[in-house]
Length: 470
Image 1: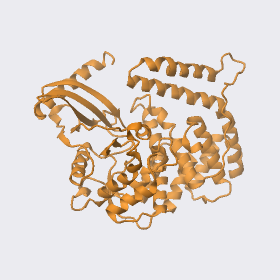
Image 2: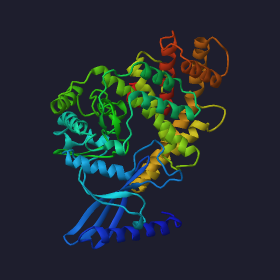
Image 3: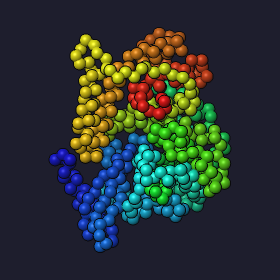
Image 4: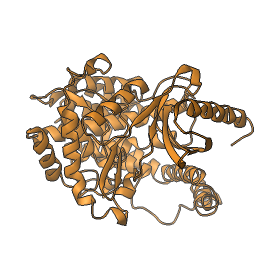
């Protein structure tokens, strides 16, 4: 923490102590308040304190301070999220208990305090930790049962439309496509996917409460099962199959492509649990539609987070790297819609050696290795993570230098052939995007091949180990 941060941190601690003393029975002293996560719009803290029965913990969820005053990817208010946590408890959906909602006089911003629950929330650990090995095969079915309970809530009787938006599939697609277009960057696979979604809308959609971010990473899991469903900030009213599809999106399988439900389970178990609670049989094509939508939405959301960093709204070391995750989600769309062969450069172990000693890629590789091997191990967990993020940034730039020119040459040639025009790469990219927006047939000869090769090449630079390339 820098010297200029200390007064703000002390002010935060004092305000927190006053709030806890006034609203938590038996509170005696604040021991620690440690930030656990800082998402797109919310922060989560672990509060340790002493009470009349000894040491105890609470969780604080509050809005992330931002010059823009809003999330870069949207979201409901924290007051609305607190209402949903309370509603979830009433309907036997695993949830923390909201103990206190912050007031203006607390001077802690907006948010709420919950009881502390024990369990694992990191998706890759849920899929690998030995102590969860026995429960993992049951998680997909339990997810189906929980989603069934969520979707069975009578949203009209609960008056959820008084604070949640009603959004059908067409509106969600158009809103996401519009937000991408506001970035003013030409990424043809995003436009292609938007077109496919609008041309393949579900025909028999129901309307229910939709969690909208129900996935591995937003579930708390312990050896007994799912302890809590977290992060309701994207909730709305709409097609419930959106939740089922999002849980199956490849981004949230953490490298395990075979187990399509969160990387821990099978789709038939998910649907069996869902049917048992709701009596509804979900069609495979509807799950595929919402899988495609989920990857489409995530491909745009990551770009928007990087854009908020570029314009200075959310300074962060991580956000520009998150922007490079867009190609992961785009490749997932490729595999769902236009799967086929693609050709990648050979991943070279040795860096290019040219007339400069060292070459730019060699410089970047040296600094990245230093950050990973020397700096990171000497730091606390938070700064160790940031050091690895910094090393990853340098590795992306290194691959861009090594492979970017050849991949750009190939892309330019494909676009020239597809569009029957000669130009530089950037104008050709824009020309294809404009044609897609103007109604170019998605089955145009050569289009799928071009998109598949281009997205795979970009992902090779951004994250060559992502499972969609394997």
